[in-house]
Image (tube, rainbow, N blue to C red; front, top):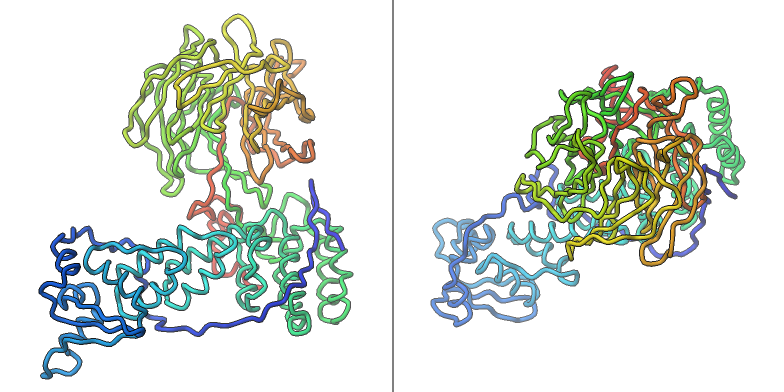
Length: 627
């Protein structure tokens, strides 16, 4: 059985490996306990060196701790009590008031683990690795050594991967590390396709855990067919005992977001045919999807049609529209294939500007408002929905090329109102300061740049006399520019983007017409640029981003035989594997000379989704989502 999707294919995969499923009991966990697993509360107290020295020399010790394996440790009761409320209560005998203090303790901790706990008590440090973290967290939790619990949780959070995240999540649940559980759950949902393909623990989820994951609006999947693949993989691991859950899990699939031919394939699946309730349900699904409202409408109240919330948000900012610069911001919800006008407009309209993101912040650099050429820099915080001013560049620049590399922002070339420039500068956000770097070898405005392997590539542009084919590269380490092979076509208003270690130069203006052509170059491998499939729409001065492993081109100038050129709102995307282009929904506004970027993993991604917008407008947040 095979499900088809555009532009590539998703197969329903069957898994037959078998392992016994084990459940772990909750330990030391109460629902009302406050989570203390994240290291926000770690003290900055500096531990006196004398403590470590006294411990190593067994001097002034006034207590003994015996471990489960017979190892004995001479300790200072006050120091251990400061790190652990458990040992404080034990040594002071506060449980049995009036009784003399205790000087000895027997604990069920392996000696090697207790030695690490003592390291923390005496120095504030603890050596954590993959072989000891489970025992450290278990015993630190049992004996109330909060600092080690926090360190272990931070270590596990940093180590999250598709192969281990489910195991870490189960482990965190045992010790009521609610922050780690929350972040682990988010990791699973945001990386679900990789977890499904790489985690050996996926098939050991219980039914309720699987249902919770695949029912979530924030499940990050490119295609809804993946959810059905996941259900089949889980059931086929133990088909005899798990087939009874098929109908319940099937209802979590949002069939309205599938290709119709895949819905028909699933409706004829063996498991559907075997149960009348499944068959009746799929008949209703087929009927509803066939009679669905016109394509422009999305019913977020109907679970079949409600899109998931994308992990990635595409922002399109500024540009030239209706004969003047604009400050409009639009966001693209890829799961719904819809553009949404945002209220997060800046107070300064601009076009022909640069844009990049760093640490979840969007930086808008230079540009032109119809009268002034800017050297100003504005930053937008999409979490707080706020704009603010940054330090100005040394030079005014519109038609500027901007990239982010090595946690710095680079602005190159452009036009200052008098001449095309070859100067370049970089910005350090941590210092809010610009610094000049060596100039390019060519004057370039309306060029485009991209970063690959600690090198900045810039191609095309206009030098005041001609549209250029030339390209060059800046080595961040050596601080030097050098030439790379010229492009096939001269291009200004071009877009350069990196995908899979390959540079793609798309569209632009060759001095005569806007181009549909594109070409690619692999630094270090290709001797020259090679052509790729042409776009459906000729365009220059458009925005380009990587989203869902596709290259999206957005808006721009298009040739118009009446007026000479016109702004457009057309959007299309390129699949590098298929070497083909596909249509996406157009923006709400015709715009050229705009810039765009993608930010992943925003905590408020829902604010920029069609589901979030619907809930804001209709106030139905609690009701939306009921099955």
